[in-house]
Amino acid sequence: MSTTRANDDEFIPSLEKGLAVIELFSSDNPEWTLTQISRELQLTPGSTRRILRTLELLGYAVSNEGRFRLTARVLNLGFAYLASQPFASAARPLLRELATRLSSSCIIAVLDGRDVVYIARETYVKFDHHFVHVGARFPAYATAPGKVLLAALPPEELDARLKELKLEAFTPNTVPSLEALREQLTLTRERGWAINDQEIFLGQRSISIPLTISGTQSAAILAATSVSQMPLDGLVSEFLPALRSTAEEIEKVASVLL
Image 1 (cartoon, rainbow, N blue to C red):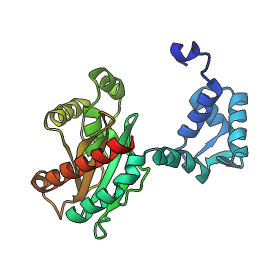
Image 2: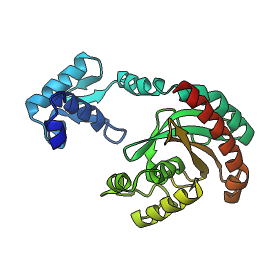
Image 3: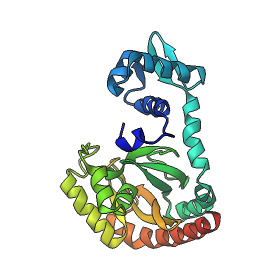
């Protein structure tokens, strides 16, 4: 626990531990034993047992032969956040119109730690090569909206997010190093947009620009398509103007709601 947290009388350490346990589960590690959780989070077995029992009683976890798994009820926590972003819901008609106009998939994303989370999505009916649902998250460094949002961070905060970051190569096109990533972020900051050319999914490319919500670049909008439908230069010549126009409309909506 940090010194700031330890000196805050209103900070609840048990809640911190409970949330840490929930965040430990992932698609790569959907099940954990009590011993594994205790070791991974450096918690005492007794503390771990109480947390897991509480999650079970509240319906957030189930156990089977000593292995724990989260339940679908945990989704309520994520949807509660999405529901608290009224501009995302209000922007859906604009996203749908843009998706139809560009025959693409159009998404609004926000930055969460080192990941981007998709909070709104509309897709042209004939474009669904890589289905990405609302609430999906991806490493920011390998996505167009992630690079837009990372590029908008103050230097100190960006350094903290990138510290000891290990880059995973999802495809041969994924940015290969932190040095290369920083170069891309500098370019993104200068031109105001970022392109993802098959860095997460082979066969898909996208372009993204920032959304200024409540005076800060706290979200990004992107349009994604397939490599067979759109060449790289087409993302800039055809998608970028439409993306900017829709972004302006969404920002107007947000200014009224927030």
